[in-house]
Length: 245
Image 1 (cartoon, rainbow, N blue to C red):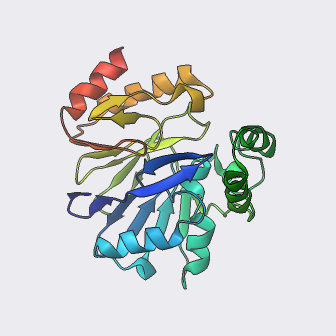
Image 2: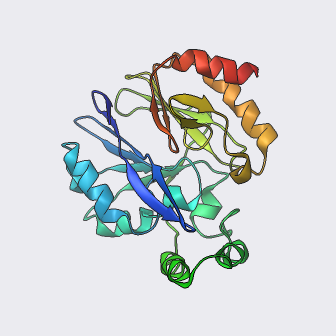
Image 3: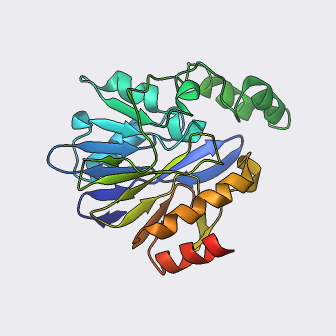
């Protein structure tokens, strides 16, 4: 969905642990940079390539990937994207999630023990799909760590907002030019209504709820939730209500 000049969401259908969901990476670009925020689940390279090209942006000129956090549905296709490129693509993430993305530490939520337990209740065909998904190492080098309040000088300015809780190094992004907040999993949405993060997938809910208060400092016209998509109606008002709840 086109948000404004040089910013668009990509809709991907993902099947995770027998559950189908729609996820929303974000594409930001101008004449000098093409940036992808989050990369779907493993195996979605071709869907991402097609979606980027459909937006009128050449996939082979992708310059940067910004990861909001370490979860598999956000970093899953990153190794494939980097391998498919014929040039260097810089990867950005917060320092606290860097060791998980690079494979120095096991994922907090999708470690082998948890995956095995979750697979117990699934039919055999779903188990095989999950085994294939985790067959290749889901690791990639983080070229640059980014921190709270940092303004990335790309595409009209992108402000990094450190929003831990969902993971230790979770970040959200504010695209200054379009007044768009990219929340990662700091927020979710359904039917145009914004809510706090999913408690079942958020180890430190107290910190995550405190992180939401940071959004009230920004003039936000559009919110992009990775789970829930684009919200334009009363964005600032909804965020203020959440921060004060």
